[in-house]
Length: 118
Image (cartoon, rainbow, N blue to C red; front, side):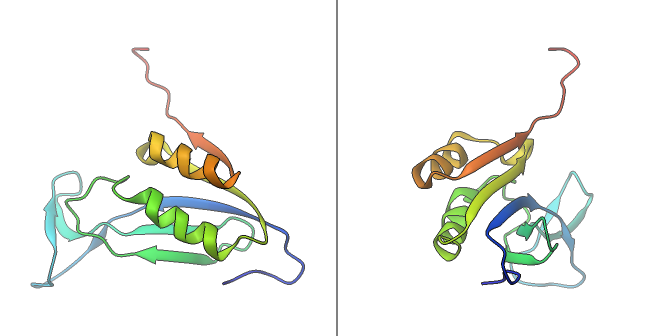
């Protein structure tokens, strides 16, 4: 567990990214969006310190939100003594994330991009 001395709150920024690979690593796949092969890791950062709290290496062909609620639940168990707030972007916005936060009383914020047609 990574916390700064005296820290009573963590704002968990949950996001995913693309990690390019070169060669024939096990489990890599082609991702059309990035036009390259690689992995699609899920990452959680502490917004105050910028520290990486947790990372999960995933296959590139998985959707951004795939199993993100399980990833979050493991973080909640590690930081039970702190006041938590979760920030996720629209790619991770799904009912299972909301429910995981509600079950533990964790506050959450979802960043949804504006859709001009709406």
